Image (cartoon, rainbow, N blue to C red; front, side):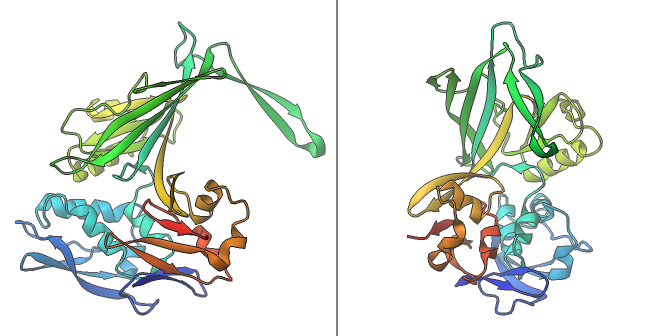
Length: 351
């Protein structure tokens, strides 16, 4: 079994395993997820789902998938789970199966699976970078100033300086794991490094933990605010995936704030704090953590290789299919493979 990256007149198509033709427009397949005790709703514009004993059969068309917004597939399968169509906890697996059922543009499946926000997934680590302030200063006080200078050729060079409020910065790391004995994930502090001047001190956890939620929280999303507010993002949580999607829709109506969610399972993150999702990729036998949204080209640069094109003749890429690693076949005369987005668990090598 292999993935195949095929060039067409319009785009680069990623053909999944068990699919013969890059122009396949419809497919029916027997899912590996267990059927639930409820009924499977028949919704216009959604894949058809029918019961077959303890399993379900899904019929999906390419035309229908291409009409859906970002993250729709995870939202749809979460709805099936809440209706009892599939077993509790089965929605992520079914979403992955549907995303890999048909040939799609190279990164279309990822767009269908994940929202435009940061969806926290089990293989991730979360990095939080926060300023360390002098005593008496708050995160509402300015910490940076900008001095602009004219450059050659009519350009402008901007130099950024810190105010006296800023002493250093703290980098905290969190691990994300499947929830023990339950559905969803748990987030736990790994460590926090405090940098002041040339000194670095490691502590068990950050001064402020933005992921400390009640025990029933199981699904998490970092909602980045596009409008001008005093917050950079909101960390929201929910006991079920369907509830997380419902809470996200509430935030998408106008300016987002925890008050819209009645301050339940919601934490506001100040503008001076940065939250990044990191995913693991194995590169030449060793782990490399890259920022969520990185592609194969970014993985290679993160591993210290400046000229990725020179690696094409000996480059090997593997990605997960049905929880197993399978090879991605591609044209070695084309750099298109470098645009393939990684989601964690991929294996890349050239040695």
